[in-house]
Amino acid sequence: MDAREIPEGGRIAVLGGGTIGLGWAATYAAAGYRVAVADPDPDTQERLSDTFWEALPVIERVGVRSAAIAEPVWQADLDDACAGADFIQEALPERLSLKREAFARIEPAIGPDVIIASSSSGLSPTDMQCGLEHPERLLIAHPCNPPYLMPVVELVGGEATAAAALDTAAHFYESLGKRVLRLKREAPGHLVNRLQAALWREAVHMASEGYASVADIEAAVTEGLGARWAVCGPTAIFHLAGGDGGLGKFFDDLGPEVERWWADLGAPVLSETVRRSLIDGIEEATGGTPVETLAKRRDRHVADMIAAKRGLTKLQTENQIQNLPEES
Image 1 (cartoon, rainbow, N blue to C red):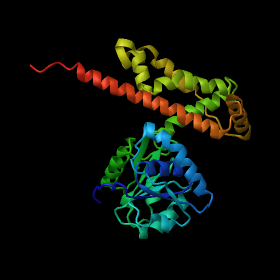
Image 2: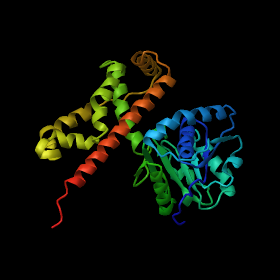
Image 3: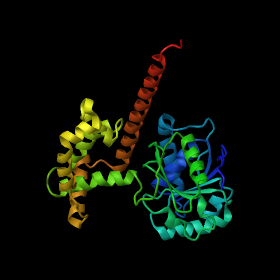
Image 4: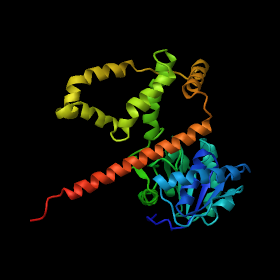
């Protein structure tokens, strides 16, 4: 399989009309692609339209917006949605058997070099490739939620995935303004979700064991950690904490203490009691605000943050160029 370009204004089929699928559809349609979303639920049509028009102003701030766009369309039939597609974005429920069944059904109807990109949050691409005639074109392309807002896309190949397929997908997502993360090998949950799950595990432990309220745990992240994480990764944070000595100095000063914290981290179980306490806790923390309202607030505030960060990065780059020494 050779690397190829996804043609501008080409056809993209999105399999599944859930939150991720509709978010992908909005992203692609705003960039000028002709998008069909396959889902048997007729309510998908209204939700698709609502998502697209709500996402469009967000995409104008943080994504790629074409001068000429066409609203994505709903198709009840999987074959109709995939007819003539240049790219397949799968966003079906997280069930391996369901995904395999869909891939086996559409494979005879699409070209052998058409990439099938799965949005799976943690399934193995190697497992999904089983039984495909062209397993080399299947890969994981997992977004952060929602895809129209968040810049990151994780790419993971399976044992049979061609390097050219990963190259094609990476170039395509980068053309949409995405930051592509390419994992070197498979891991359950990929990269972002594993990091997220590690923090949430301790958050659940702290709440369920009565160390802190859900509201205070949420604030510890949004007010204490989140702002720094937008510009510094978790290792860079401790590199800075070491002052002039950097990470080595931090290890000397606090390495054993961090190991003590690690040893004391919790391993909670999502029992019915724990689930109920978290549900009640987040209701209290959000003041019972409807999820739809919280999502709109998230989109607005995160878009502001991303735009501000990009502005700062651009200014920093311009300053570096202006401060270059003159050639002799």
